[in-house]
Length: 309
Image (cartoon, rainbow, N blue to C red; front, side):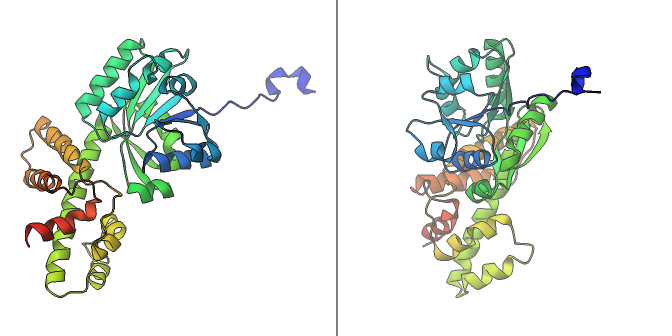
């Protein structure tokens, strides 16, 4: 029989892939945008300044956050923290105004390292403003700019099962998304991540100073340690900087101050009396007070050397 006699077997047009809007095109958001564009996903971007390199790569350009919100099915916000996101959301040309103009539901994926309770409060505000049509997932990432460029980020998802599944499918070109629990779970996971990262980079900085002052070859030392229990992705990515003393910005050290504050918030909420966390917070507060906060986290070596000179 012909297809005409069996309409159900007729070829259907392919369903259009969801459009991902991206706000926050810095060292992390920019690399993630490139991964998504190169994967063939429809991408639309907005920034305070024109970004012709992303348009040339294949992204559409939105003149305002409102236009981006109206045209995107899902929005990835890769901003430093929630205050910066609130600035983008609010106002007549803000993202929220555009999301409310859509007939369909929208998904807001928050990639910043932020407070879990504050993420939940923002999600409640957006749900109330949209009659439940704006869904929120927190999706902080780890792996640095190198991981963002290579598409190997660890992506920590918090939200409902359905929302997290949708976010995971959209973000898969950027790395490995894992759903860890309800909204805010991703932020708690990132706080734990930053607790480990801050402790490790300070230990590496101290080790570099002690070893150098003892006459050891840092290149040889860190190469050797990389093969033992002291080896880590952080050592692999920062080895050259620690050896050379080049702490030009990549992963900005001052962000660790807020990240560790969120870790302390999570510890307090769970009745945990941390041993290491107060020391790490004091160390990074001092590092920033010494004017080193704008440097890469490998500035831990210089910080230890200067305070003990």
